[in-house]
Image (tube, rainbow, N blue to C red):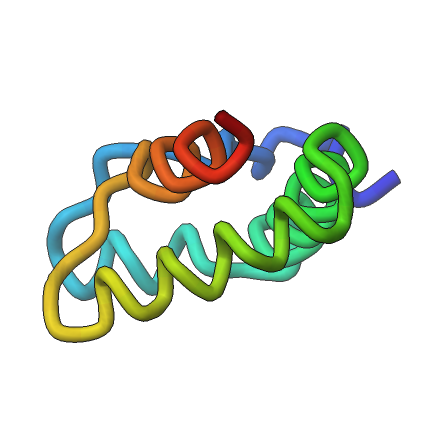
Length: 79
């Protein structure tokens, strides 16, 4: 598959400059992210996931989000 070659990379990385960021937002990143989101929805359930996602988007709409923020919302909604 396209995620087995020498150009693969993790979803999370330490890219900081615009050039580094552009280099890591590729087809592999988007496919991985979509798969992870679907897995998280299946783990938490559709209702909890959608409620937490709406709260996360509302809570972070005027700020920068960190990678763990969504999971904090998921755990808060899940109880």
